[in-house]
Amino acid sequence: MISKNLDQTFPKSKFGFKIFLLFVLCALLPLLAISGVSYVFVTHQLKSEAYYRLRQQCKAKGFEIYERLTSLETELASIAREVGAGRWRHHEPRHYDPVTREGSRFASIVHFRQNGHAVSILGKVPPPPPKLRSANLSSLKQRKSIVLVLNTQQNQPDIVMIQLLDPNHPDKGYLAARIEKLYLWGIGAEGSLPPDVEMVVTQPGKQILVSSVRNYEFSRPLVEKYNQSAFSGVFESQHQGRTFINAYWSLFLNHRFMLSDWVVILSQSRSSVLAPISKFSTIFFLLILLTFWIIMLLAIINIRKRLKPVRALKRGAQKIANGEWHHRVDVHSGDEFELVAEAFNDMVQKLEKSQSMLVQATKMSTFGQMAAGIVHEIGQPLSSISGYTDLLALEVTEEKPARFISIMQREVSRLAEIIAKFRSFSRTSSDIFTSLQINDVIYQTHKLVEHQLGMRQVRIQLALQEGLPDIPGDKNGLQQVFLNLVINSIDAFEDQPKQQNMIYLRTYLKNDQVFAEVEDNGCGIPLHLQEDIFEPFFTTKSEDKGTGLGLAILQSILHKHDAILEMDTQPGRGTCFKISFNPDSDASV
Image (tube, rainbow, N blue to C red; front, top):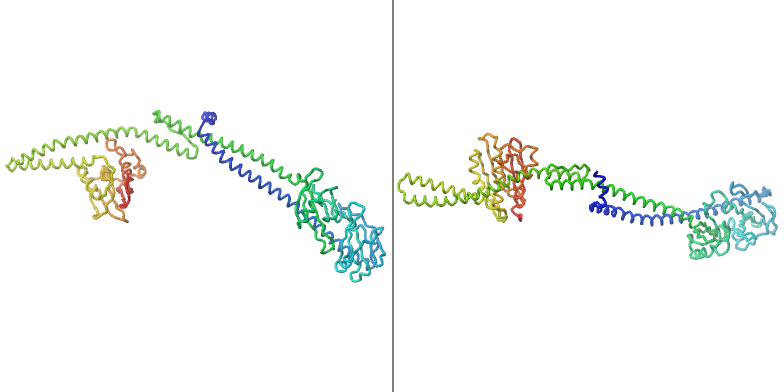
């Protein structure tokens, strides 16, 4: 039933709505902030990674082409040695298969002699000798080989590698080897290019050497990039209505092959490059939406759970307000609400007990008011009696009546002194602090209880150090403190042998603090009651002897004096209350 009511009243609960709003804001706002930052960061990171990956693939392809050129150079040098030694036999090249990577890596090789005569070393028809400039010839003498790009009637130019037959005898001529394009560019081989990636190799400002994309317009952006002396980079271009991301990397060939730089370009459609970002965006949005609903669900479940003890405490408070003192709150939430419920039940139990205590306290208060009136009424007849006895003493001359009148005067004086003491003690505390001697307060307290000490056969021993500094305080309030402690000590001798009952009152100075002790050798306080004796309305005395407010009031008075109360008790051996005062403290009400 409670859960059902909670489900119905949850939207109407102001407390529940505030917690729900706070929970959602504290969870949702950081979630949105973190999500936004994460989305921007991850999107940028994915894009950067995609561009970086394309550039790395472009660089790897460039190194692959360069390594193939150096491998062809080594192979051509080996063929030149065979031809020079007369061990080479003419044969037809085998077709190069890029899938199996088998076949001749040269399409044809021709030996051009010094007299211009050409001999086919590999292939059928020897092509005309390439036009070599003087710089090319001088480079051949210094380098292993040179590479030339020869235009043909086909879309792709021929790549020719030239090498002297014998570097020590240039007059023997040179070999001109036309490189197999499928081998050099690696197009068509499995794994030569990543999926959805096209390749273009070009000489900037001159021509396209090879392209896997027909009619690809990229030259203008590339020239602009290259003119900026960029060794490598990334740029975008348009082709057939699609946007492509292009990564380029330059091959420096002049130092080895006397050839202008080649630029390797890998091109991939922008949609393919950013495909992981698109997938991430969808998954990220769904994840955020799922997280939001999970937060909402957890918020509602937890708030409903937390409202149960709140409603139980509210219902309990209403019952107590209606006078149902026997009602107790039953909460087992395992958190602070359970502790609050326990404290609530303890409070109700003490309130229930305090009802009878308050009735008794009211009776005691009325009795106190009556006692003050009685003291006042007794004071007037005593004054009259005292006056008349003085008159009689003047007229009587006989020795025996005069002695009786003297006794009467002494007793009347003692009654007047007792009334003065109680009248002073019955005054309401003014809470005005003055400098006073703690020894004077203890002396006056001792006089108040002299009669009671004699009746209960309790002896008191004073050990008051002289010359103690003054302390700021309220005389009546401190007198009430020591009076309560002494009366408690007297009550502690209720079942003790009469000849052993002793109370010790001590004062002394230690560490610039004034100490006062009230110690007895009475019954002591049992261990299980030591934590409860300062609680209001707690008492082990009968209803006619105490209300349980003495020590609680005592602590309140000492708190105003910035004094500290310490208790040392041993069951069966006695109790000592020690109070420390600070002479320099600014006591205030």
